[in-house]
Amino acid sequence: IAPSAFSDEDMTKVFEIVDTNGNGFISAAELNAYVQSGPGDALIQAKAGVKSSAAVDSLAQARVRALDDDEIERLWSRWDGNGNGKLSLAEVDRGLKEYPPAEWLGLYNRKSLALAMKTADVDWSGYIRRTEFDLLLRCIVYFRALWDLFDSRDTDGDHRLELHEFMQIAVDLGMDLSDRELRDEFQRLDTNGGGMVLFEEFCEWMGMHQAT
Image (tube, rainbow, N blue to C red; front, side):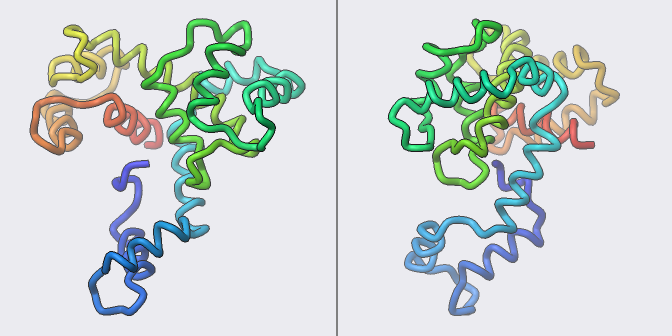
């Protein structure tokens, strides 16, 4: 999840947690201790809330509802081949290629799959556990749909959107935004000023608009 998903107040709270001696600075030792300890419950809940409301829409939910509970359980068992109760990105990648539900043929895409994995990893563990698996399935469908939209306007095939391509997507979606508003949003996403928006940045933008 991008830092922009959290408010300034949230980030201040995180800083205060990491700065254990309260001197207003974060040392390497404090940062290492925080990373090793994992995120607190409040941040996990905030991350889960962003995904459930903004990153998973009715399209993804409808496609996943086509799988009954038994099929989802069988899918989990196949993807978790070593039975350790968690899926790595490599296992998710292999599972979708080798054991996809019949109606999911053609949904495999490395870029959208990696983002689906990152989004569904609610506990920030680097793995997908069974409690996160249903969300992963929805995210796989959702981010592949966004990739198809992104790719349809990426006319030069460089996996980045220029301003005119970005604006065309807004037209395709019927967004009620002026050219000035779209330019402003593009500049906000283009943090390095390179004149390009990457797929993950585009997905973040789409999520923010779905939440409003």
